[in-house]
Image 1: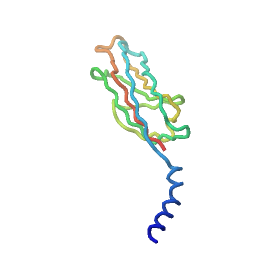
Image 2: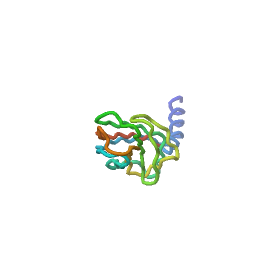
Image 3: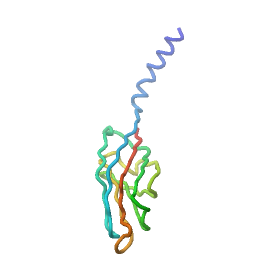
Image 4: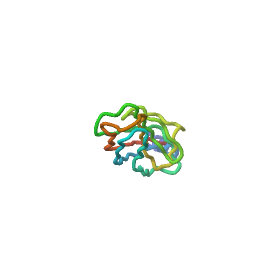
Length: 133
């Protein structure tokens, strides 16, 4: 009798679990190089395989540079519709509605300075993990 009650209870809960499906996606891309300040570097796109109705909940990122970041480095993560500012080379952030699930995603780098960058900004790799529901 206990097994039948447990089976019935699980059967009733299963549709709720399916409706609240969640998951994660990870990808990476090569970077690029900027040797003069006030230029923009856009990474190669990260094409996601998120479900069409996905809502982003959290992102994690890691950016690898060939040398130390130059003063004035600003980093954004962008989707087709919006960009959000990233305040470090690695971290995680709850995104809620501040970023949509419509990819592709890409990183945008600018260095707020004049003249030649010594050493240049050389982005080796961009990594992104997206948690969604």
